[in-house]
Length: 184
Image (cartoon, rainbow, N blue to C red; front, side, top):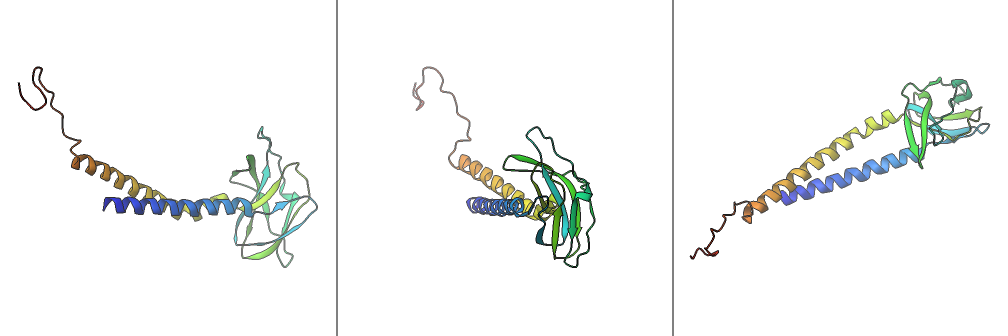
C-alpha cells in the first residue's frame, strides 16, 4: 500500500508540475509586444491586464505615463489606463520587466493597443500576474498535497523496510575473549 501511495503521490506531483510549468510558459509568451506607432489588435479575455516595460541589467526601468497607451474596444470606446498599483515584476529571457500600466477588459472582445512613446526597452501586455497566481492556486495546492503523500509514503516504506530487515534492533557488543557465536 505504501508503494502504491508513493507512486500516486509521484504521479500527481509530476502531472501538476507539468500543468503549472506549461501554463506559466504560455503566460509568459502569450502577451503582445507593443511598439510606438504600430497599433496591435488582439482578442482579450475579461481580466485585469498589466503593461510590462523592460529594464536594463542595472534594473533601470523606464517610466510610462498612462497617456502614452491607448486601449480601445471593438466599438472604438477607450478603456481607462492607469498606473499599475501592484508593482508587479517578471523576468523573460533573463531580462527583468516591471509593471507600469494597467487596464481592465470587462468582457471578451477585440481591442486595439497603441503605444505613442518609445521607452527604449521592450513593452508587452499580459493578464495580471496576481490573477494568474490565483488561477494556479488549485494546481499548486494539489501539487503540495501530492508531495506530502509522496514524502509520507516514502518515510513509511523506509521505516517498514528497516523494521522488517531487523536493521532497527540494537547491536550487542561481544565481550573480549568471546567469539561471535558466544563460545569462550
